[in-house]
Structures are given as structure tokens and as C-alpha cells.
Image (tube, rainbow, N blue to C red):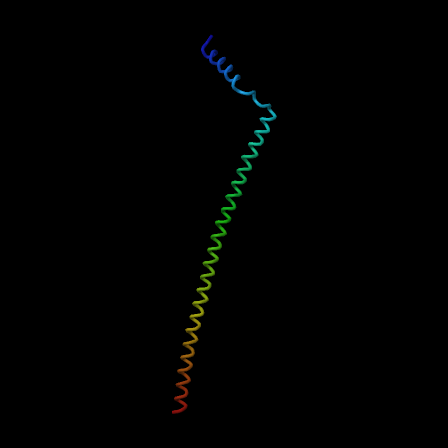
Length: 108
């Protein structure tokens, strides 16, 4: 008897004594279908988690941009207010100077 036949017989006898019979075909198909569903479900959940994380990051960035725009707008309004006050003070000083000059000219 060739050596490979001897090993084949020993492997066959040892594997059948330690292993249970294979499950019926319908059970294997059901397990296969469950595995496919589980893998697909995990992929979908992973994609949803990634999408939610991306949306959170984008909304945070948008919020920061809005805060920056709000700060810029407030600063712009403050600058406009200071500029308007300066112009008003300049106009008042010019008006006072003109009134003083006019009153001197009318007195003299």
C-alpha cells in the first residue's frame, strides 16, 4: 500500500471520529445568508456613523465661521461707530470755529 493511501485512511478515520457530521444544507444556507446580512448591516452602520461624524465636523466648522463673521460684523459696527463719533466731533469743532469767527466778525 502506498504511503499516501495510508495517511489518507488515517486522516479519514481520525477526522470522522472527532468531528460532528456537517449541518444540513438548509442550515448552512441560512447561516450564510445571516452572515451576508450581518456584514452588509455593519457596512451600512459604519457608513451612517461616518456620515454623522462628517456632518458634526462640518456643522462645528460652520458654527465657527458664523462666530467669526459675527465678530467681524460687531467689530465693523464698532469701527463705524467710532468713525461716526470722530466725524461728528470734527464737524462740531468746525461749526464752533465758524460760529466764533462769525461772532467776531459781527462784533468787530
